[in-house]
Image 1: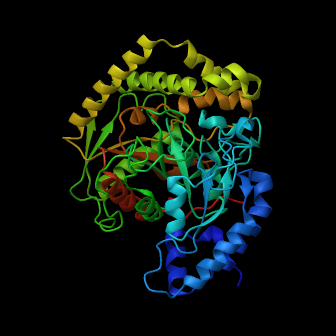
Image 2: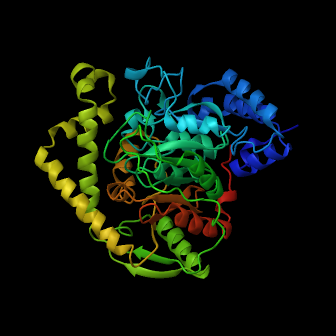
Image 3: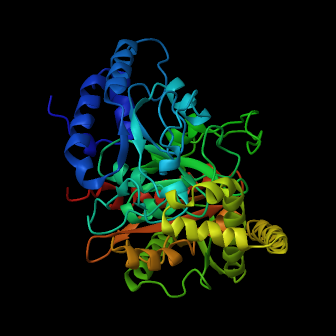
Length: 462
């Protein structure tokens, strides 16, 4: 059978395997061949667990036709190398953790295994997840499948590149200031940062104890819903986990946009936009209105201050976590990450306290806004993917978090999905933001837009 795994979505694959129309063994072999062909160019994988994946595929094949098979039976996924997988090193993109062999699975890893997923390996990321280019000084840069001379975004850049290029059917990334949504936007896939506390962070190397979230990255919105259903839920062993009811994310996915109130904040979020990004996002807003959403303009000038406060909290938390690394092994940290960590050490307790106060005010501002609307719409990034050249990428990276980071500070869910392409065939992302725990509404709105547009059907020219 001549399989083309890059053309399959996660949901389609799960259905085909469940019906016995697709072999997990054949699919896994096809993906391993594709990884062997393309990973030397893309550098998305740091570790490929080929033999383990083959054994898991054989075990999955034996379960086909049994009563109530698990929801991800035989579906091949890969993990950002922040998540523990028992028996493998969790490098976090750093040579400092090259020998940090996990003794047990992260909570997310365990949930994926229980759901029947096959794990193909661990994916590249920006060093310590502290950056948005995935130009990793130790393991090499990951390249954007749409243009190999451009960055995929970060810090979950390996995840986004692998999903977009068809090197896995989905991934789990982390998001502290946009690290799921930014690479999703730049690589033309869907990425969800859930409400903080929705997905367990146990067994995930932290960046900021205050702002980290984990979430799914896939080709389509339905795939996001399916993965979120598996990984969401309370974990009493994770102090950041929240004991909040988990919705059925697939149940109301197709209910459409009629009745939903959508807010568009023209201040800040539409300042200094790339012209092609602005045009694509405005066209997407028009499409949402055509599909039945009630669209209105809102004001959020406080977002700029929220962005600054988020940076302060993130860098202070990161500097605290890496205090011993900075003292004992500074030369083993890449220059861009070391500079950020040193900036964090220079911030004061007063700086941190003021940022926390801004966080409380920003959260209350959004609470009041979401009494009037259901969803906030913004561009995901102000520009398409910048070039891989280190100097250009670092300059551009400063602005890539402008529209994502404020919503980490607010601890609200936010999703990026494709809404168009530039004339150079670079993807453009649309960001949907909701009130806490409203992932089901975000997915419903995103699905309605996705099904009315062709962007999710596009594939990189590999």
